[in-house]
Length: 478
Image 1 (tube, rainbow, N blue to C red):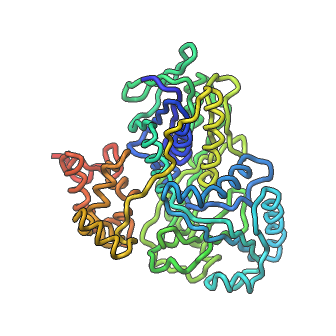
Image 2 (image 1 turned 30 degrees about the vertical axis):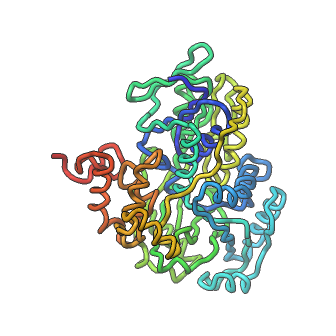
Image 3 (image 1 turned 90 degrees about the horizontal axis):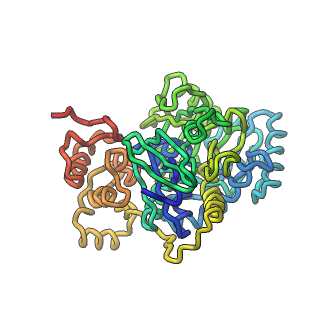
């Protein structure tokens, strides 16, 4: 199979680049080792559209953070994914924190962040009554926002697919060879792909992918930095309206407390370097750490409100505190997009524009005059006006059959999630596309029925249905 461009990795970065490249006349395939998009770093992060005051001035992080933040409102309209510009406050609890906040303010102004200002204790408590009354100062960033990261990635991939991009899942890259002017990529399933350009978006595996292409040690080393989170029930979602940070440390922006786009409250993350790139287990110590730190921000956080815990890995570079974006100096036609940790989610739209333009110029690709930038999400019964809901149910009665009671998700939504391209193949895929199972009971009631729907629509036996691909079967094989 021959393509102009082979993208390795279907997280938010790979999906956003794929969509932007579909606006050019070139053939593109995305290879993903898992069975769906957004199953690595993208599905398990804070979901913050950062304003851009934290990154060091002049870095790629600073540049693409600010550009990506400005793109987010119009992009969420075009691709129909959840986004809200709720603003953020960096909280200082010591007198000395004022100097740190002033430094962040000045850094943000130089980088182009708008409407930043230092605010007093009284102003903070007026905006956020549940914040620790011992707070001294705050940095208010009105342009900060919240986004659903996995829904953003799914929106990108559905739009890319509709514009001609191919996505091949369960396609772990195990060999990359150079043959004349092209790359030959082999996957674990022994499929081969030939491409003129490879774009390396493999996240925590990006140094390994680079090494496969160069046949020597990668010039950069990725450290998997784990962050753990607690998610609280929606009944506590209004305890904060802004995203609440504490003054940052060397390991990152620290533990935050933030509302989510769907009305929950999110607490986390911590930062723990991992040797195992697949270790996303939560720990008693880690969860205690984030809760203790978050309680400094908001002392009345209710532990009884936690409905689930999870962890994700960030792709941190050993040699640099910045992104790596560009063609490799030694590997012809090999483009690295590596070390995309925070603010990678915010930066992704701007990174995608930049990368796609550079690659299209390199390959001399023309503009795709048939490119359609619009994608519509699956209709959410719970959010529709009564008259629209009634019309939809009349057209398709499956939308009147509620499967997930916590999140009020209908059978119609689940069926559509399965049959979209690329569609859901397992329980977690349904979760990310419809929120079925995301509520208070965490799939305690709706799992059997969702499994039945998956088996019916995919024409599979019930014992073939998995939680998240591979061998994560939900019932014992017959």
